[in-house]
Length: 504
Ligand code: ZN
Image 1 (cartoon, rainbow, N blue to C red):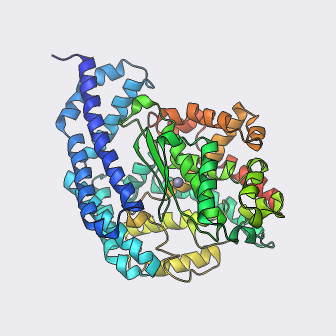
Image 2: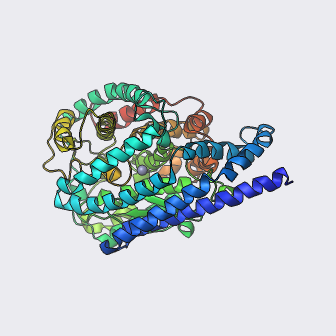
Image 3: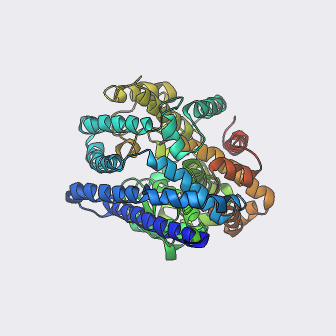
């Protein structure tokens, strides 16, 4: 008869194997999105599906269930926040969820996702929605099927929302978004009725190599660890991880748009610093990743916007930027540059959107996901619905589908449902967490203006990063900020910052 210690070890050994299979699959995905030639797509889809299916089969092995049962009394003897109790608790939650999804379905979903991604990668530059439509219809069918493995929901989108942001459902997100929208729309209206800021300085020619070098230097200073990471180019920047010692980010460069590469670097580095900050003893375990889409996005947005688009940050960084790009920036004052990178305008592309209008882009997508899943909107009518809603919310009509319904990869690389609400939850939480860090360390504001980011980084690591998935999002929000999620700090942040740039 084996001891509790042996059983825990047996569980960890099995979980590490599953973690390794998932990380190998992530490596296949990284390669597909960076260096793989298009000809590799079909085989890559098959290979990726195989890895996902193998991981799923190993995870739902009934021996894992037996070990979890045998370890229950040990778990109950420990404090809730102990590493062992948390590992057993989080593994059980994921195990019970995984048991409901057949491995063949996971394989089918992954294989389909790889094909759908390839179709999207070709369709977007060609403005060819017809090319992705059959694949997208299948994605919607598979998404509904996935939700239906979790009966008892209030809305069919709920299980998919819960995967990404535990505890949230369509109705709670709708309520939250409605109150945020009520606050945002008057701010957007006030700003966009004034003369637009001049950001032409960002659209001079900025050579790719210099942008890449500057972007890498900035994220290094923020605290992204290149001994455990690297940056490569892709179409649609993302962060991925193959172990806690290898957390990568990707970027893209537009030579006539200075902000694109730099701010997406800071964004992805924010995600990556979260993963790099996780307790190393969680390597390969279900605890060894960020806890939810919303909390993850709070970290990318905190570094990208609250730090990266702040006046203090550029008081420190602007002289280095001018030295790197003297022809483009000599004679451009710090305040002119600061106004340019914080220009608010109604624009077409979510990832390029300013902080104020960004959430309107998210709300549109969230509503479409919900409508598609419930069947009140069809894939066939999606491009037209996009144009209409966009005109209603932004007062502009997308000139094509490339900059409309084809602009985001999400629906073409997985499932429809649960993909977008995390972005706005992240914006809300970024301000809530930053406020808490400031309360603990009021000197952070001055430090950022001197290029010192370690106090802020340290607070985030201590209160959020190191815990990985030990706590759910509502738990970590409560622990780190002392209250449940609230929109007030975010609204205050926007009003203060943009009140100084515009008349509100
Ligand atoms: Zn992100």
